[in-house]
Length: 171
Image 1: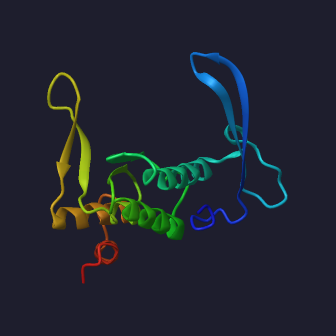
Image 2: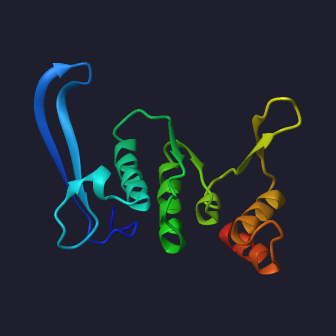
């Protein structure tokens, strides 16, 4: 699966050893990872970039989703460090997961946001003494505008609007 999300030369090794039972269990598990050809796997926390870690976590959740009774799977900025074709593939994997589970994704990439069945805009309301986070479901037109802004900024260009419609398969 890591090859599908652009980590062509990935290798993973799981180190497992029994330890004296304590408040975290009786096993010690260390994930060893390498994204590069000819480089021996090392502790994940020491070698994985943000994007590599995000994609590895997506693949793990993807594999575990059908093995556990998880009605909802949440991805919080799983798109860190990715873009373009890899973002499209990650979005596609998440959409596949959504056929059997509710998937909630917090994303800043239009390729991922466009894959969802619904699109919500999260914002801070500062009109009172204390800021409050709020969420609004976007209509189709608002969604097109939001994706276009994700592509080109606060004042989206005509081509960004066309591209947003293409991402949503609206012709």
